[in-house]
Image (cartoon, rainbow, N blue to C red; front, side):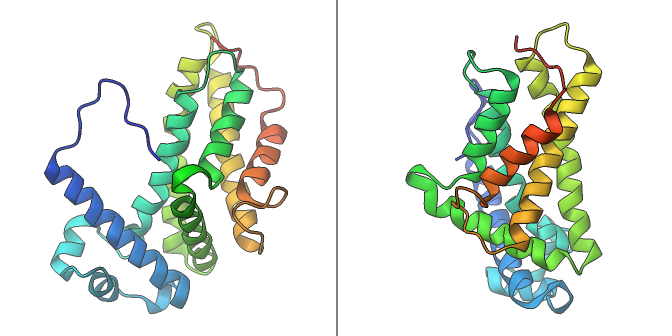
Length: 218
């Protein structure tokens, strides 16, 4: 569940409806891509499945591949919110692991929704393997995530932390998440598998890729 930053204004009714429409289109796009492959899916088909007009579809997304973006960025927002809210007693490395586990482990009252979102992402990644345009959406989301990670890590780290170390930490954490999700998607383990699930793989990748990065906690 995504946490709204303290003091942030509650989205208006129009904004909430727009976000809900985007999520609904994204959900149906992911289902169609997973079931039929990107080449056999059209914008018209996605619009029809989502119950919107083609004109409405193109008000939200420029291409059929971009329709899955809200599904991918929703998980990113949760991860960044978990990281930003890390308890002060945790080191940056521990905070990253906590955020990864929180974002990639189905748990609590929203466990079913988290598991469904992870399985949808798995289907998308399998479809993206044979479609450059769909894969480019996945890679673009991760490029944007890396940029968004830098200021969050900066807030958790001491003021005198080398900016290069922050960039390295952001790049390593982002790569860990991407590699873990791609590895998990290629296999058959469940979302909550303690050894081969996405959270377990991400923590393993995170530890390997961030070893030696110096980001002391503020």
